[in-house]
Image (cartoon, rainbow, N blue to C red; front, side, top):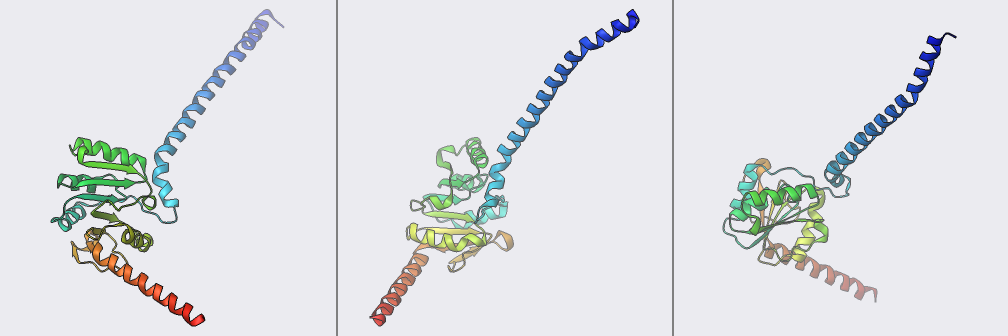
Length: 227
């Protein structure tokens, strides 16, 4: 072997470990960047995807301008406390606060709740609004005199029972997009997908009480026959 070949061989041998270390460090950096990006993507996407995996899903679909106007029209003669069940980006709560309501929103998605709080602060109504990260089935709505719900058909029958048991008889309930299955609305506002249905709590609470009484009498009568 010539001296030149020996020199080149030793040079290449000395460079190989360094190149390997560089490639190793680059691989670690790339792996870290990709892993961090996936974690960040999951953190952002998970709150939007998770509701779809629930048995009863209340997806985020922003209210249209007409829907917001119809809700406010339906509650024009009302005042006091208001809750938006599944408040999304907070537009109903913020609009209600601007019309004098002490308005609250309940939403499972933390990103939407944080955005709603920021938006309420930007619109200057943060003192008359509140937003909560919570499951609607784990909250009592007994303190509210006005309820707004953008529901889905799969949940409306369960929500009927919950609201009938919890709300005061003076409360009003405004349903958007889908009406309640058994309640009879006292009036409607808007048309098409922007229709809202207005319900009187005194009426549906009375109907629930009557149904419970009939059920109790029927059960007692069956027990008497058996004895």
